[in-house]
Length: 159
Image 1 (cartoon, rainbow, N blue to C red):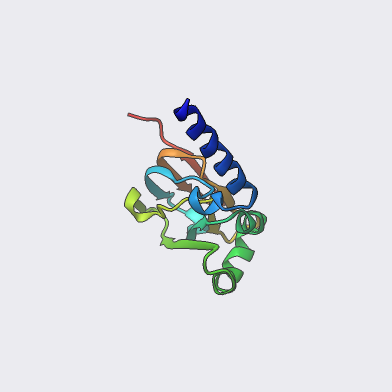
Image 2 (image 1 turned 120 degrees about the vertical axis):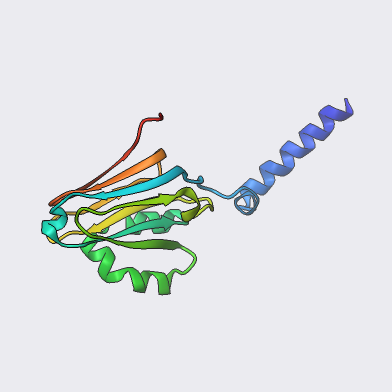
């Protein structure tokens, strides 16, 4: 009977905390990336035979995810410094530059290990297009393939 009473009290306490938002502090929202590593492969002639700027963006709250997920790559690259200055706790990113024909392997320890609302990849191509992709749902080994006019991202099958 005492165990039942304690369980009920704990349940009521958690319910009252969630109503006032305290559980967000105790149990952060979002999830951690389940990436074993990321391989970036640029095809010969990628980006019309020009280096590709690539940003892997880690979004720490839903509001930033909402804003950043709507940006085309051209707007991301022109506004990222202002976004970081304005919302320093809302996002972080890793910038790379890949030349055509290059392959780059990044281990899992390279990436943000905090809980995230989302993660995006932006590639700065010379050709028109959105050149962005949401990637936080991918798991395992991630492959980013930079093509002539666009890029793709996929999870490699387990070996």
